[in-house]
Image (cartoon, rainbow, N blue to C red; front, side):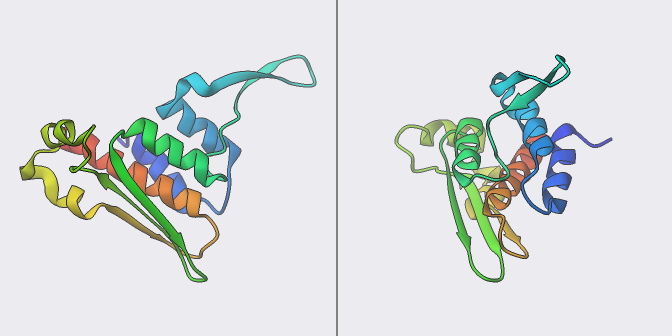
Length: 144
């Protein structure tokens, strides 16, 4: 049975563009404190987040930094693809020692190269970064 993170990774891989429901589901999984109740026209309330992870690269970046502190990230885009990669920054003066403990040398190979995403066609660099994040989270979850 697939985990929540695996299901979200699958949805990110097939997302055609920004998706408010996907943003809300990502918030539920990783940052539930950012979910608020929105008043609907009929007086009912529904969950909502102001964080537009799939539409806004800065929002996606902040989620990476909050979820995996001490990891480096990079993104790029061209006419063909959006690219993103994240990995632990073992040289970080703040997080390096902890990252060495959490991801020891025996497990480092996938972490040294990073979790690299080449998303085609281009136009969704925030989603590429989120894909990279969820690839790392799924790998970590499976390794534990």
